[in-house]
Image 1 (cartoon, rainbow, N blue to C red):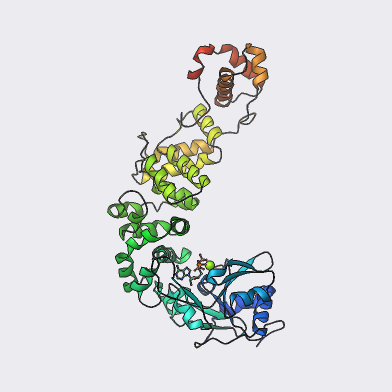
Image 2 (cartoon, rainbow, N blue to C red):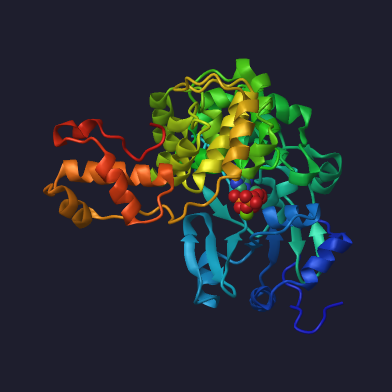
Length: 455
Ligand code: ATP
Ligand code: MG
């Protein structure tokens, strides 16, 4: 039974137990010692502790567990007393964060919730000692299972294991009511459809109907919560299929600009192998390719993306529909300006063009096959003899031209930098030779080429 250091059994749950599948037992045997200490401390206080939520779901599905959450029967103040190092990270909802070895474990006091009146949060939360009631408030059957660490047993009152075998997502209790309580569950439902290597699951019919009837509930959800879930959906291994389904079911129309339900079949075609090389943010930019830059900006502001995320998407979006020319000079400038984003840009253009997506700002007529050609040329491009940094500086240029500091000097320096890259110049003598052959007069400096992509 319990090996060395294994905690004494804590308070027993008020629902029947079943044996853990062998892979879960194996996982339990390898839990970090801090978890066993936490469990022992709680048992000594007469409390109960269970691993709940995503960790139970993922270990049962054979997926790597990324964080472990506990449900405990002790009240939050009691937890803070017996774990003096803990942090009250969500104390109003009963959550304290317990320190492990370089990680925190969230422990949430068992609770029951009153009615949800605003579609986002329960009006009132009360502490309880019933694991059964605590699991009942959870969203889907696969998220409503618990593991008793010391006894090495599971509690699965809503038959999440069976649903896993069927590849089916089902709400705990009445689907319609559960979705109407909290609009975010709509997005969570779509997120859990994506089972990575195992493909895409299905909704059970009651949940499917409830999602369709309640899609407007998303409007009551804060934008930060929507963005967090949406980014996880976009990052999934089967995101194209899930996004297509969301479009088809009218869910995308509730939080993205444009009309998506009519074009769900085209979204499925986003399933290009290149898309899976990129992160969720990049995939989002592809999805928004046909929106105008104003629409994109408004949508990203509304969803409360950070400045960094917004700038990133707007930059990608602004380049969609553009390509470098297939000359060495043009490809070199393209590579120097976009750096590690250059190859990504060509691959995104291949996705857009092979799927018949016309970016709002695009004018090019090249087809995906032409872009594959460009990608090959790009990959074969030799490194520049003296790298991408400018071989000359302002002083060097002032000495040779007699120009004073100012805008014109800066523009001439940039022009030379561009020529250095286009022609793969090796040293400042070669730059000087180019300068001597250049026809420049300061009055025209606003027309001088810049080092930029697109031009
Ligand atoms: P992840 O792998 O993203 O962490 P998760 O299921 O663990 O997925 P969390 O947000 O960490 O998601 O929530 C932990 C658990 O809390 C869930 O498994 C579920 O039981 C419950 N839960 C979370 N959000 C909701 C919600 N909106 N409605 C009902 N139960 C929820
Ligand atoms: Mg979690």
